[in-house]
Image (cartoon, rainbow over the protein chains, first blue to last red):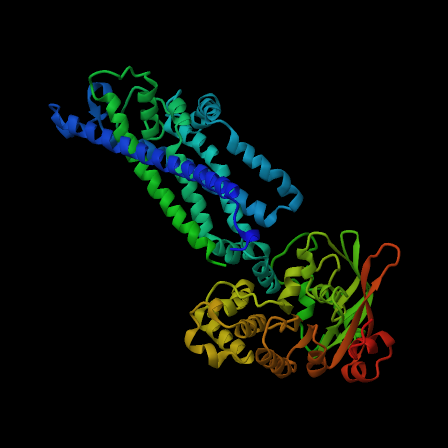
Length: 308
Length: 299
């Protein structure tokens, strides 16, 4: 080989070192993920097999409510609580988030957009603990109780849901806006050129063109809402446990809220009963739910990229 | 306005901000316009277009006659596309654009205070440089305009319009068996003819074409040029083209634009050098600059 193009040993060594550092980082991330999932699965299995040996057996998974210290692990209570909170959050976040996205992408002047977009990202940066207190200090007494006189005065799933919804708005708005803006300008011109009003262009060309991105935004927002913990831990009530119930106007427990309560130790669960171990079971279930949603959104986003 | 009542409808009678529906001009104004309406579809009077502080074209006085093909030619940056986009108020979509002077459409100022740009664009269709079909089916592409304007809603009515438009655009035989497949699967030339059919579908008065063949191969270009000649009896066509041969082949009148460079500020402004019958522009133009350009000795 000609000496000029031969790789020097030093460069080869430094290239190799860099490669190993990145490789290690990637490996580390992967190993941690596997460990987490493995721990969850093993401990969830441990919980279930121990539960099967108790007098009530697996029947405790369907009981009158979620009271882990008393051996009642009605998982339905938590799933329903999560669905109620997520549903209310989406009712708040979808119209506001999509509305903001459409406004920013189709109607706002560039100058306004320059100011509003960062503002939206600030909203995304509000610590959820702040929104939790906002939910019990403002949302429940001033909104929920005012609208529904039969609502619980202190904690309701609805207040928690609205709080989670506010946290979800910026995610939906930001991802959906990117999707809308990715629709080629040529299509806007084509539509306008045919005598379409701006609203017609928006609803008949831009939104259909961006639909997979919009759906991805909704799913991302939804998995955020499902996983949100602090707001529900503070504002949903039912820290120690809760009866199975379907109304959003009462306190309730969500999967994340129950896990937080168990994990905090506020429930003094460490001991020989299974309360602490039920955490892993709930955790695994939550993981599977959000994983499926993320997977779905990933698929949709990939498809969305291929459209143009 | 005897030959067609169309152009009159673009004015909102109730001035304030309504962007819906057809409104007609007050009858007194109508007669006033009628009496001295020239046979021109468009007439610009001292038209200046600015993008922010930058003046893109200066003092353009140009006429476009009915049922003729008018070609706008000239070097890059001469403002020919900018002028074209004034004819259907497409410049409105550009935030910083500002139009000064008058653009008369059948004698009516398109930039008058109560003219509805949406109504203007329903009468003045536009075909763009790059084919821009919607990511929808061939049928839905053509039916888009009639649907949004409320011209036709029923599938059967739309089908009639779709077939008629595709036939006029010489595309029917190629696509009649796959109307429901995506327009994005067509060739570039087919897509551009689809865009012409889509523009025709709303039954416009004028077709504006902004370098419609610049992304097409010579065979597709020839088809579009033939198409333009076939449909010019029904429409007034204004075409911007970089291709002088194309202007010579298809147009009745040619307007030559040029760029004027300000020595001090280096600002480049488009000006209309001259507009005349196409044979005259390409044989004995009045202006030296035109002659230099059309003979390829552009300085």
